[in-house]
Length: 67
Image (cartoon, rainbow, N blue to C red; front, side):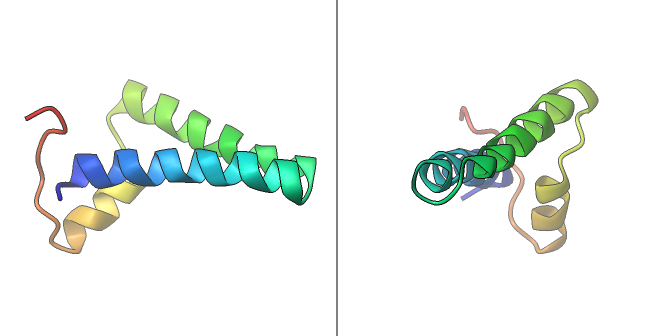
């Protein structure tokens, strides 16, 4: 797996987790989904993603999600 695919996978799972926790535990868990969405938006605007930086330092191969 490449950095881009892992970032997309983690973001999607975090949003789904946020929805489940907001439904079953407490509505404030929707804040997790808001945080993930804001992070994705700033990543798109600034081309900086903290998770991608961490994965690259760990040696995960860089690559496009669409190849």
